[in-house]
Image (cartoon, rainbow, N blue to C red; front, top):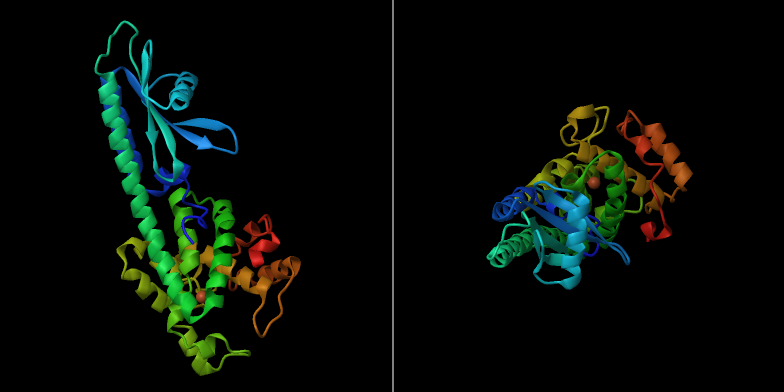
Length: 324
Ligand SMILES: [Fe+2]
């Protein structure tokens, strides 16, 4: 499931997802700069064929100069020195490649630059590996919870995966970045995890729910919140999970929050959740076309859904695979 299915955890976004990483990287680049005059950490953003280098941290100097030297270092894949510059390749998790470079006055001889750069590169690799391990363990925890839910009721997990696929472009359109986007995707995957407490007979009921069923059903957001709260790494998901059935007009559950008092993540989840249900249908309601679903969403704007967010839905790319 993870990280293969994750849109968020890619090598080039590792430092955006891990809040501790940027400061640690800056500290290492500053230490490298102390060896010479300036230093730079370049990261290889690999497309299909081309390797494009992006400066992650630069103490000073021309980006183009750093980049062309960085390419040389990555090409050679070993400690490289040219007059005035020295560089070392860095190997990170998930195939991440980077280059730690420093520049110095051409007149200065830096006999120990090799060793010092290697030391900093080793520190970098250790930090990147630790960061990836932390993020992976969070994702594995989420995957374990989902596997438990799937054992109880597989369709809820299929639904959650489709909501996750919608949540990323929706979050991007709402201006969320890196860490917030990653959290939204995780929350989308786990938003209904509390349904593990609901009887299968209720979840699979081929008709309207009874009052008694609804009492059970309405507990799933708070049950889900209690489940993720037991895991410190997932605590940040508590709010979007607890509040994904709140309504813009304050008539939702469990806390009857209104409007902006509902966390943004929960409002985005509500939108993705509602759209997914309309598009795929349920035992007692037929699937709607994209146009019909959007019309229904429009009709719910300002009542159930945040009217300021619904316009973010139409540009979403949809392939038939999204609904498999
Ligand atoms: Fe739900």
